[in-house]
Image (tube, rainbow, N blue to C red; front, top):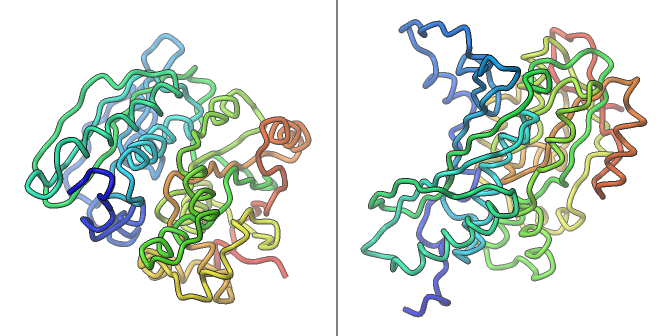
Length: 347
């Protein structure tokens, strides 16, 4: 088979961050009766629902360490490498840090796919790492029934600039730096009905680095930050609310959304991960209509940054978003905890 005829998504049962284990199942996996070994240097660890681990280096700086990998969400191997790499590096940006080094994680069905295809995946990864200003310095590979690729990434930051998803305060406004909907579009691709212009929109979104996170890390008005991936906007916002002891109100008409989603939803392009997400956290969410549910719980791959900004810094933050060409409209806010629902939709 010609390498150009390869369609990677045919070789995997999942796609991108839609492969993620659901939040409810993940809770069971992470629960352990074995006590963790205390480490005073560990600023962020597995006891929190953050994007990466953070270790205090003791000199005013901290080390960020993360890993992320998944199965193909696109057919082109070069683009698969780019998307998986941008997604993995995003965790460093989501903590307010600067990536410094990456190593590759590759699982490859060597009896089904030629090594030249995997080479294209790595070339795509190197291109994104170069854009992030880091080196892809090595890695590990195994023979695997399905193609899997990702990165382990290290980053650095001034400890005072550390951003977490659990440090938001009441009154913070909410922002999202990428439009929602790539999960829906990837499902349309699997069905063979994705229009070329929408394929280009999805690809551009997924390969775009979340570099602004490093800038946001330096802003005192940014109180909390995370990236939106496989749990959808609702899932990651719920984690922010739970960690911060707050509730959120969403103004749905202000949420950044890829404009063609209604068409694909009318064609029943619903990722399986959407329902898994909803089953995990739906009871924490107020009343939604079907359109809102399918968009807000849509699993994102290499999604945007979810940022909580205190009201006093709102104007400065929105001006920076405009300069960067990012959505500059707040889609909601955080308020005192509502014991009944973590997240509601504004009337």
